[in-house]
Image 1 (tube, chains in turn orange, green):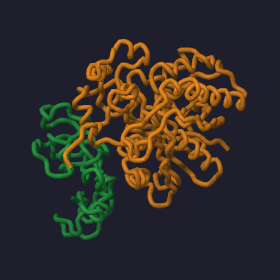
Image 2 (cartoon, chains in turn orange, brown; image 1 turned 90 degrees about the vertical axis):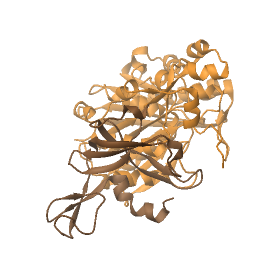
Image 3 (cartoon, helix red, strand yellow; image 1 turned 60 degrees about the horizontal axis):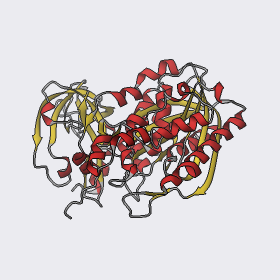
Length: 352
Length: 131
């Protein structure tokens, strides 16, 4: 019995801020940030957009591509995010209610820095594989925050991706070939209770955290599945900035061509739990049947989930049934200045 | 602000755009009613509204009430959906409210409609955005 994705969808807010607009406020050298982090602009959520609203729209796009999955047959739904709108009260209940999946389903909100989204994918496919549920949804979504003036402010962005897993052969558009997770306790990035902004270990977030974890996870799944980099049509890695995913991919032996379809961060920013999942939706938008795809996330703290998918023929009829990811990224943008951005992101202290 | 109980009662309409189709005369009512104003029928079938339409008329609220103040200026439009049902709703994602035009095609997206300060409930529903 195969298990796979029967529907996928992304949602990217329309607002953007350019790197220069942030750099000029803090007296930073924009060209060196552009070159160093390979970032040009990032998405900004509107005052009326959050992890829940983006998750609903991404899941509706996934349902549109599912070939008629009845939401009432969804037995589990997981929202992975580090920016759930409530500290206590699940995001998943609102999403499930909005798509019509309540009440007979299991819901959980997940949190693991930037890999909370792929945790949901891992659980969803495992429950379908175990025969516990007919369909399960994994969502990665974030409206992430960077402290004013911090390096993270140039990348922290917003977006969501949703995937419906099932085991009916005629609906599967990408089959799960293998999964693997690699996790250690690595304190590279954290946010304590009641704090608005995260803190991080600066350069410690690089080699000992992102690169070690991502490479171990990707090598682990390739060894487990008996695959080499050259056998994949596409590979997607977590995208904390523009530079890291390209560098880690090339260190692992992947080519620019294998990496660039799912490489959205230079124009999207880092959508945290949404980052590698949204990159994966951009790949599914153009992938061909029988393509092998590697998806490797990274979450600070630190861990990485890896998946190998084999694209199936149904992708060709499913992909046009909802808004494609690159279209959402490249069209209808609304550019905002830093003042508007600061207001939208709640960075301005208001009167009580 | 809206009470938790009232917001909960309205979830089917606000979250899933559930309307009532009169089994007697087929009229679609949104929000649903107990008695059909056209034929007096009292039995209805639940039907979701389409999420596409066009702006019939609009206004821009420059001094919104509590719960909406962070969204000022707040565009409100009467939107005629593709099945002919007209719904009053907020318009989102406008760089400038001057972009609003009668006849503008719109899509309905799930958004925060209002929120009770920093500590209260967030009220979700649909807004019209440029189609």
